[in-house]
Amino acid sequence: MNKLKLGGKTALITGAGSGIGKAVALLFAEEGANIAIIYHSDDEEAEKTKKEILTFGSECIIMKGDINDNDFCEKSTKKVVEKFGAIDILVNNAGTQTPQDDILNLKEEDIRNTFNSNIIGMILITKAVFPHLKEGSSIINTTSAVAYQGHEELLDYSATKGAIVSFTRSLALQSKSKGIRVNAVAPGPVATPLTKETFDEEEENENKPPLQRNASTEEIAPSYLFLATEASAQITGQVLHPNGGIIVNG
Figure 1 (cartoon, helix red, strand yellow):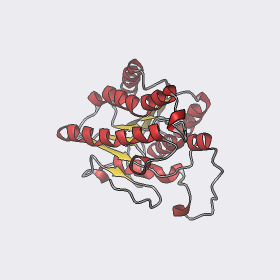
Figure 2 (spheres, one colour):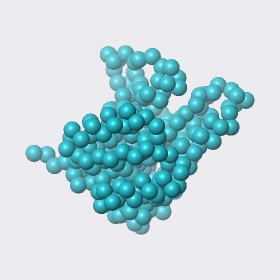
Figure 3 (cartoon, helix red, strand yellow):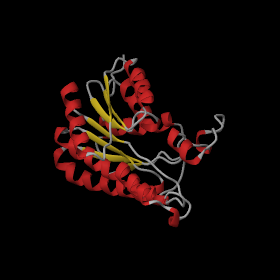
């Protein structure tokens, strides 16, 4: 029998009620990790994700709240540690976007919400979790190809994704002496509930070759698994690019 890659580990994953976060949670559970999920609002999807995780024999807790709330971050972290005794992997995946094709039409409320969700909340939950990490622990942040390419309809979102790259590199430098690895994943176009909702995208042709269509969330999740395991022991401060062949500098 093959040894589970994450057996005995505990992973805290934000934004894991659906999309990439859910796919990562399911893959980690399949590989033996206990899963703690932070989600923002969709109770039904979160409960469904939990049930799917339990089918792998892993334990799971779900926590509803806003990672932009420092008190919530602290309480959630405490709950995970009390339940599982440790946190070995933090996956920062929560995020939002509000497309707008003209900067003059950007709403201040949407800009602040995007930054709060995508980067400020990421820093707050990482700050809460960090004291519980130890040598060999891993932090994995979700950035995007738009951090490198830009996107004409996602000015504020692209800016937050660029900030995540810089945050990843800086925290990796700070964490080297502690033996904690900090990396990121920068997907290209992915078929998720968020992109379908915000861009009203039609279903992709499933018969198209992988490099000629939007990725599925299940095709992105293995990049996170690699960064969570000892297979990536020599990798920190880096970004993986499962983007279908988009050439980026970084």
